[in-house]
Image: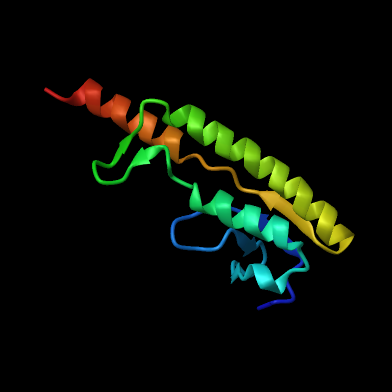
Length: 116
């Protein structure tokens, strides 16, 4: 690990792994952490689901996008707790929940208000 990272962040993003260092901002490989294969797999699945609430081709929030993002964030809370349990007190784990759906919802509302 880049800085002997012990303060970690769970954050889903496009084209990146879900584990980040809060100190040096490095994107860490799951294999660098002593996590069970089951939890590693679930973290990968969670990360792959990031952004399913957005129609990327049209750059538009899906009708149920806010709810999909909420469910994704709840899953992230569970994964954060599981990571903390498996890694123990040597690491502190923080979840960075997604806020992209709310951003899109606000942008789409503003667009509707200002379009002619």
